[in-house]
Image (cartoon, rainbow, N blue to C red; front, side, top):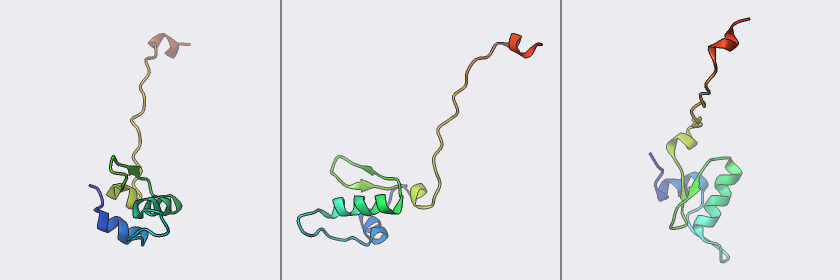
Length: 74
């Protein structure tokens, strides 16, 4: 369901930090540049789903609204 830290490193090409910037910060910036959806977890690591990598966008369920049948006449 989620990519491992090693898979995220392979995807982004970033395996370690540099110049005072953490690996996770660099990976998050690269994921943004690549247009891949992700979240930052409580440990500060980017979390990526396989669906995000495979281009499957999750769509919210459509909101159903009530409509009176009286509006169908006329």
